[in-house]
Image (cartoon, rainbow, N blue to C red; front, side, top):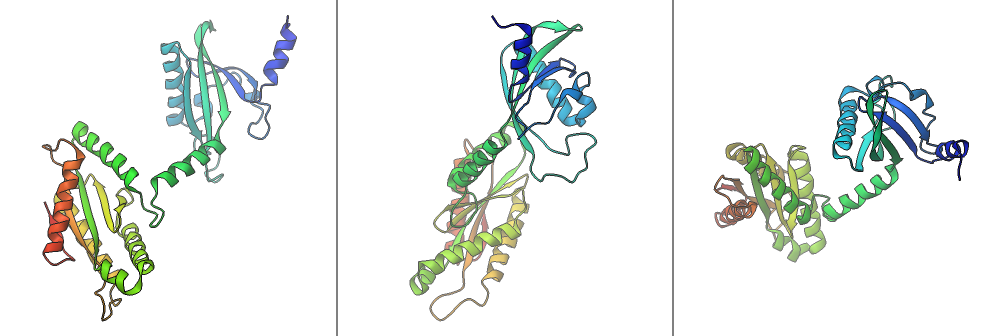
Length: 301
């Protein structure tokens, strides 16, 4: 039978830190954290409050998470990040990447000093999180252009369509492809065609907002989601993009083919749409109308 002294030694030897936290966010006790690769001695935290140490927004998240665990009376697992900007008294300069933790929060069936308490086990998962982020990025990224791929496009369209239906904020969609690409491929080969596709992708990155979502739909077709943009402003964005592509390829024509331009279709998600597919079909139809009208133009539907 293990005695109290041995139990204390076991708790102290735990590689990950274990916090006994009150409902109000007070550090009641701290055990473990002996893996010096990731953790510092936290014994000086005992008796202090999370609000004493952590900036308000993040501190409130900790308090809310403790409350959720106590209310559920079940194990709660959460992933969270901490950076130098979250901790009071630290300069803004510091590691460029936050530290990621997995918390396992267990409500306990007793009180300390009249407060409910939880056991909070914090495991440093920064390396795992970085690898998972890299894998997600690879799975969402078109290898040729570096833009998002069709898989990510469908996820983003589903999210923004749901948000439109729920909250009513406007969402517009651009769809375009490259004009005269076949002539370029036939004359200079598919490597030149791939270079043209990449050049258009780079023009998208330079021209669009950071909040816009540019995706390679397939081949030489692209789709751009414009959150919080109505039809008229989306048309203006499409014109800017068309002009930027035209400028990027100006002077690149020869006797065998015309310079690369784009034909753009524009639409806005409508209240009558039953799915994002209907809006995407309108953008596609508008793009082909632009093709039939002579290319290098913008058509709206």
